[in-house]
Length: 197
Image 1: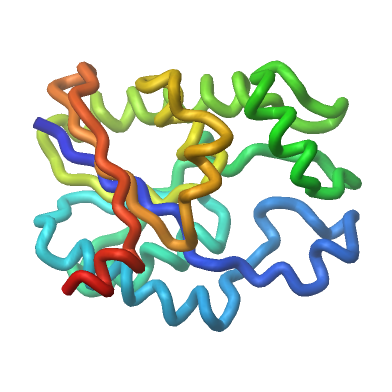
Image 2: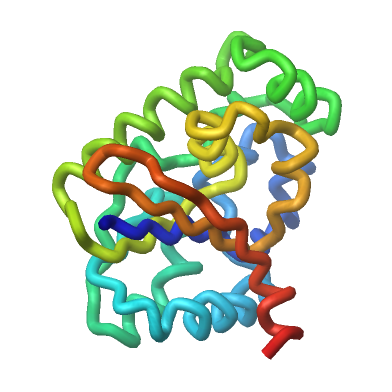
C-alpha cells in the first residue's frame, strides 16, 4: 500500500502580480504572511502520518508550504518539474470565466498556455514515476489546485469545476494505491480538522 498526501499550497501573496501581467508567472508567487502561518496546519496534520518522502512542485509557494514539516522529520524535498501548476501564459489575466472554460473543456487554452489535458498528462506521468520509485511508502507531495484537480479527475471523472472550488489554501487530498492501482481518495479540509479537534 502506498499513501500519498497531496498538499495544496497555503495562501500565495498576489500583491503586484495581478497588476503586472508580465510578472504574473506561476512560479513567482511566494506565500503571504497568512500563508506562512497556515503552514503549521500542514505540519500538525502530517506529524503522525509516518511520512517517508517529501516531494514538491518546484514553485516556491508549494515548496515553502511543505518545508516546515519536512524539517521536523529531517527530510529533504525532492522537486519534480512536472508537478508544477498549469501555465496560463504571460499576459493572461486570470478570470473566473477562463477558469470555468478550462474545466468544461480540457482542450481549452490560449496560445501561450496549457490546456488541462496537458496538465493532467504530465502530472499523471510524474505520479506514476513516484509510485514506481517509492512503492509502499508514505509520501507528501506539495502541489497546486489545478494540478491536484486534474489528478483527482483522472481517477474520478465526476470531479470538476464545482468540486475544485471547495479546495482551500492549504488543503490535503489523501490517495491510496496498491502498486499503480488506484484504490481511493479522501478530501481533507485542514481548517475543518482544526475546529474538530
